[in-house]
Image (cartoon, rainbow, N blue to C red; front, side):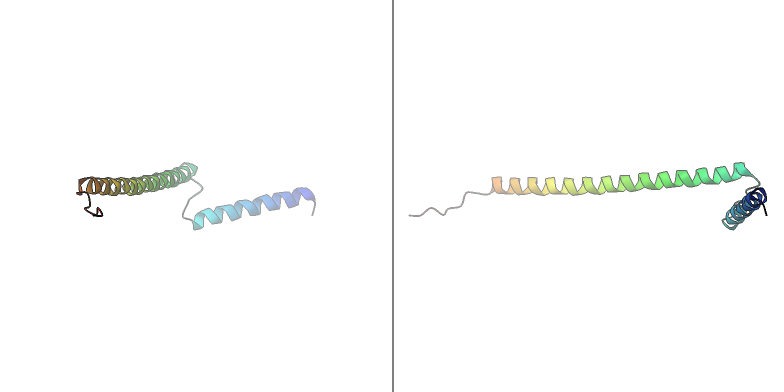
Length: 90
């Protein structure tokens, strides 16, 4: 078998493997526009999930920082409103 026939056989085997892989995944590669649409949907879903994760993280950090500031302010107000202690030595 010469190099040209081996290369042709390798290309046919690769095409068949890729075709079967996509078919196993439920994609009909005879309609490339449909496959592109499915990949575009998956890409958009990935970006949406990443954005949702970032929004949730930002919200949680905001809640933690706000809670810390509120606790500090409540403690400051309580200490400022408390009467001075009467522990003067006579």
